[in-house]
Length: 172
Image 1 (cartoon, one colour):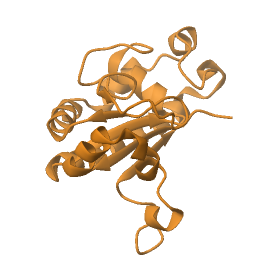
Image 2 (spheres, helix red, strand yellow):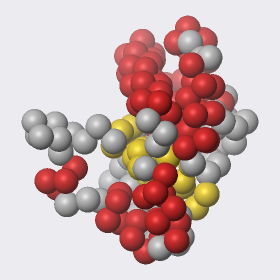
Image 3 (cartoon, helix red, strand yellow):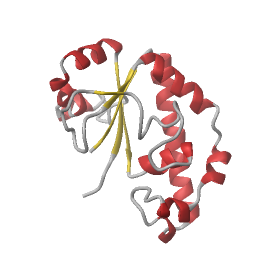
């Protein structure tokens, strides 16, 4: 079974309600199937599955396995735990609308070329960056996959910041 990284945008009101009643977190993280689809049947725009690239993106943004400086460490660290409800690999972490704006601004200052230069399959394997085995794969393919997800991530958070949305980050 694999570990999938996920981001879900929520309104500030939803976040306040969730922090007041964290036992409701599964209703937000795992909505009924039909509620997680747009009218055209596409995946809900407020949910961004990073799949297995979540940890590789964290590494590219911070140069670390689990640490790094805020706000760029948000994929693996920071935010406020939402209760104790396990949604797969622990509880989600919540970021306020103000924090989403800060993260988005920081991501706007990151360019793909700097991330490309930071990619180091050997170091990623040494640090056990999930899903491991980076050295066994084609570097160019891995980098392009990560950079594609980075562009999507940056756009996703830019939209959330513009709309004043908060954020849940979780692994399942």
